[in-house]
Image (cartoon, rainbow, N blue to C red; front, side, top):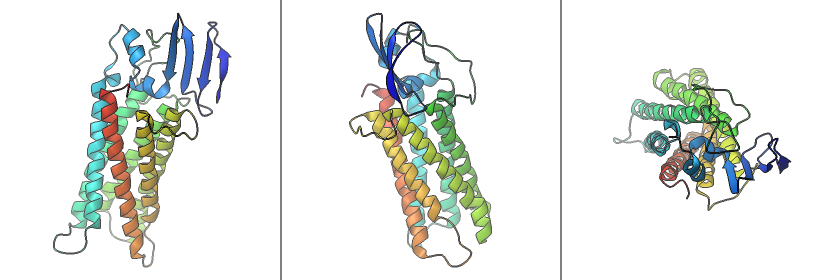
Length: 285
């Protein structure tokens, strides 16, 4: 979606975004050229708008909030990476038990859910678009919200629900029996659901930042964040597919390749989280 239209106020505006979302608006008002970007707006990263806004931004759009979300995501990603390495260790006296490995994965899922909700709360309470960035349109405080026309809201919502699925997936891996049908229903199904939701979330974040269905902007920090996270989501999806437990014998390579992709995904999320922390400190980078 790309084009120009005349706002009811008489201002000519250029809009851009992958249909049906508007993720970018640019126009001139009172002699100032204004560029409104959906991702920067909901995260409070628009320095020009912040400079014109005389009010104190809400806590969920502060640099400290964005940094904390990145740090919590980094912790969860690191624990998932550690759990993956523990799973890949060869048999021997130093090999961790399945229980301890699964506990590490479950502990990693908790920061994922925490950061996922904090990020969704931010999107749910982002102010509505207004022509004057100095007077943003406020919304009533909400825990979940309902903004299906926003790619950012949809992305954070699907991600949060996906993290909850991972809570069930990793906890069930600790308590469920080893019977193949129990493993598939209690562990694999929520793993697939969480991974699918992560993939949807990652792509929505990618198109919100790139303003089209596919973009290549490797010099842009925001694009780097959503791109590396999208790669992580793809890796998690592959890991989930290969984690299926068949009724009969399972080829040994499937479990290994699944865990390797889980490790790749966790490392991608870790990099994305570190870049998010950097973005919170240097939003104009």
